[in-house]
Length: 202
Image (cartoon, rainbow, N blue to C red):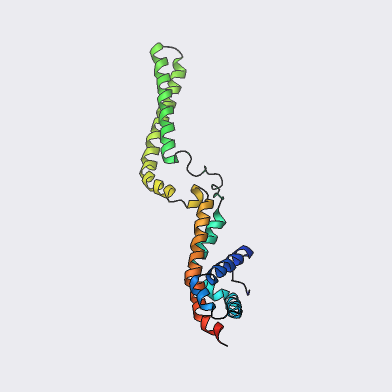
């Protein structure tokens, strides 16, 4: 074979498999039966192998989809450096206001509790001040971060398939079958039909 551009050894074997299947169809076998010597079949096969580039081009889109699925099978997209894994945790727009608000509430409870009991008044004042600072931080973070949250959620949902999980073996098998079918119906069979008269010529 002259070699279909971009096809590996396994894919060239697939091309020959589809060609054999086409030569065994009732339509082609019936036409080739006019030459009981088998010479016409041999010529037709040789011509198809020599025209592999032309034939394979008819199923180019399906072939690209198949090779893309095969390349990503079993492979996950790694998270960005320093970032959380895809799909894990909450976005910072939610985490920062929440943590600040909880911390502020705890510190204020401790500070006012000590104030009511009249113990460690100096420490109680410091705790209350820290609590109010965190409360201001929580409000500011919420005001800045929460409006951006609706835009962040679609971005996470729109991650490529590879970030959500690997392509399965079944996906690859389906893509391969689609390529074989397109190669047979749009590439190999039309070519054989065009060259049949020449192969049967004396």
